[in-house]
Length: 541
Image (cartoon, rainbow, N blue to C red; front, side, top):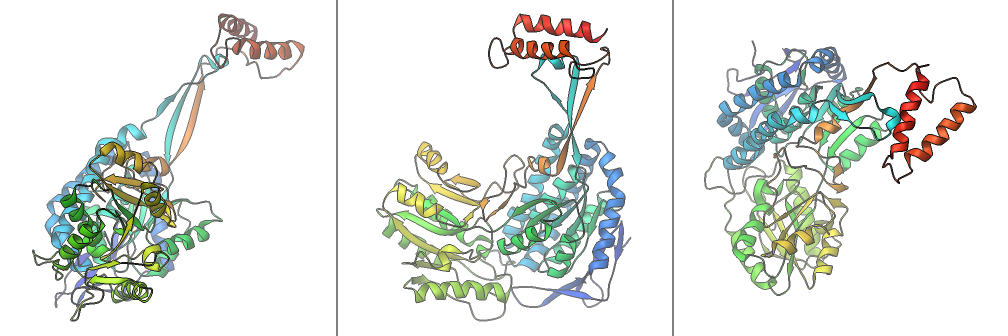
C-alpha cells in the first residue's frame, strides 16, 4: 500500500491525495518550501473541482455505514489513531518544524501534544455526550409516554485547516467530526500540505473504512470547490476575511458552519501582577510560533504605576530572544511562514512608526535566507492604527499604559475581534471578576493560550473572531442534529386533542387548564391527577 507521502530519488517529498480509501497522484503539483531557508521540501497534487466532487461522493457513500457504527467503535479507532500519533510523534514534529518553521520544542509541546490531549479527552468524553438522552415532559397529559433525544450525524463534513498549527488544529476538528458519526473531506492549507499528507497516512492506518476520511490538497481554489461541493457541515479555521466569504457562499444552503477566525488578544496587567511571571508570559505569548497564533497577545495594556518597569523588562528579554532554525535547540523564534506574511507585519510596524510609535527593539525583517522578522517592542502606538486594530500575526508587542480598570476594560473591548484575552494579577477573585467584563470567548488569569486541545474547554470567539466553539466535546452538539423519538404504550383509544371534537371535549380541555395550574406554574394538584385518570377512562371508551 502506498503510504501517501514518500521521498523518491533526490529526497524531495512527494505527497498524494486520499479519496475513497485509495491514494491518487496527479501531474499538477503544489510546492511546499521550508520558510527558514526557502528550499523545496516536497510537492502535493493540485486538486480541481472534479477531484473534490469525487472525494465528497466517496464520503457520502461511506456515511451510512460510519454513522451506523456504535459510538464506542468509532472512538476505539480514534484511540488507535492517538497511539499512532504518539508512536510517530518525533517524525511528525520534525515535519511540522520543516514546513512551518517553528522551534521543534513547540512542534512537540504545542502541535503534537495538543493533538494527543484532544484525542485523549474525546475518547473519554464523547460517549456520554452522544448517548441517547431521556427527556422528561411537564404535562400530566403526557403520562404514559416516553421520549428520547438521539444525536444524528450531519453527514459529510468539510474541514479546512490553517498552516500555523498544521497538526493540532486538523486533528481536533477531524476527530470531532468522525466521533460524531460524520465522514470527512479534509483540505489543508497550501502552506502546510506535507504535514497533512503524513497525518492522513496515519488516519488510514488506524483502520477507518474506505471513504470515511478523504484528503484533497491544493490552493485557495481547491478550498472554494470544497465550500461549494454541497457538504453538510463545514469546519473552517483561518482569517476573518476568508470566513466572511465562506459564510456568504454558504448562505443559500444553510450549511452547518463552525468557524475559528482572527484575533487581536489583549494582555491586561494589573498593578499587583506577579512581575516576573507576567513579563515572561508577555514575551512568550507574543512571540511563540513567531506570533503566528490566533491567541497571541497583540495588545498590551499595563497599569501606569508598573508601566516603565514593565517596558524595560519586556524590551530587554525580547531583544535577547534567539531567532533562527527551529532545529537549533536554542532557537526561540523561527521564521514567518512566507514572504507575504513577513511583509504584512512590516507594513503594520512602519505605519505605526509613521504615526508616532517608537520601536524599542527589532522593527523589521532580518537579512539572509528565510522569512525572519526581528521580535519587536513598540510604545506610543497610535490607538487607531492597524497595529492596534487588525490582526498582526507576527512577533510584535505594542505596549500602552492605562490609569484605571474601567479604562482598561474599554481598551480591551475596543476591537472588532473577541477571541481571547489574559489578565495578570495576584488577586484571583479580582482577575475572575475582570474576566467577566471582557468581550471574548476565553480569558486566562496569569497564563495564556494553554487550553487549546483540552477537550473539556471550548475554543472560539465572539464578534469577528468566529462562529461556534470547537476543539472540545461540546462541539459534538454542533456536529450533529437532534432527533426526538416519542413513544406511547398505545393503551388508550384516543387522546384529548384527537377527533371527535365536541362540547364535552371543549369543557374537558378548559377544565384541564384550570386544574393543571391550580397550584401555580406547573405544580400539579391532586384534582388534576384525578382528572387525568378520568380522561384516560373516557378515552378508552
